Image 1 (cartoon, rainbow, N blue to C red):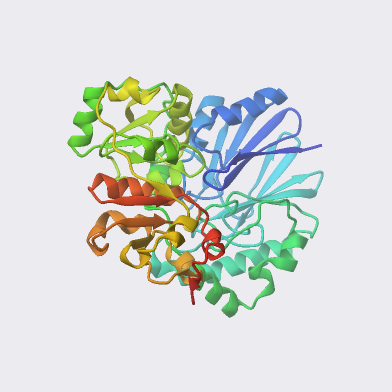
Image 2: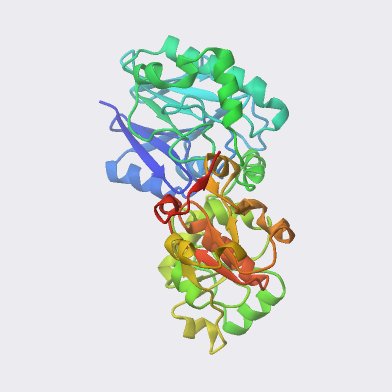
Length: 451
């Protein structure tokens, strides 16, 4: 009996897979940190013999080539992709034997022009469909990552691909997508639970709408996506090596000050409240955890030297792993421990934090600058009357758009507000970070403006 193991990367909203018949194993869409995949195979005592890519990914650096080289497995990538490395080319209709399993390639363009899905068969019965960025759980992959000029044509292709999967696969076949668990690669919000072809026929817009309605809805829902995506496709076409996850060298306090003053990035991984209570002047707060790679990768000038500050070596190592997945894998140095260890007595900068109730209680609220750093789609869904809107990913180049005065900055949950507050403080602005859920604004009497 085939076992399928999901290898989740929740911080990027992605899921890779290991499938095994108990002796041999195949892997689909491996993330960059392949040690997790190797551990899953070792735990089951199976040999990885085939590594598949559904497409050239635009949201992360693949671990597929490094995994194939580490295991001696065949690396199967679409024959239509112009890659710079040796691979086993695979095309629509190809069938590949993997031990007691058979994999059939199905062309499913839409997310990319050359996208493939893979139907996994045992004993002549399809037991899973690895659909990559095509058919997701209740959604489909976005179609604008290859450029705005292609998005409408790819949306129509995505509609046809979803219909093909639904027509050729039985209702009972589990759908195993790579994207759609919070990934910006999903065109619309997608579920994360188990799903089948039959489930998707009932709920997926590509299978319940007309083509015209589906395409219009998909295109209307496309919002900004992380800037680092522009670098992922070229990296994956070139053939990325395995990451170096060895600990960065230790940075001393004088170096931290010198690098910040030189314009380099020093990212403080500590909690947003700890950062607000005391941080190095000019450092930026990217609290470690599930949002780190997305927002640091989105905002950092590509190739900028990066040094990390963390509570512990483990916090730095976690951040290093997250960042390597998007190709930020040359950490210049790191400093760890309490502020006394990396500040060496230097005066720490501070700024206040607050919640929406405290904003509502301010008698001089009309004189404050309320800055909303959420994305356009979030702003359109509802915002505070009188707020200034500058999405976080535009903040660095739109500082001049923010009026003078005390700035109270908010987002949807507090993470982006903390990042924005650190950026503003680094520019010398007087700032208060609202560390609160936007849903609390109405409870505090701050009624969102009409859409």
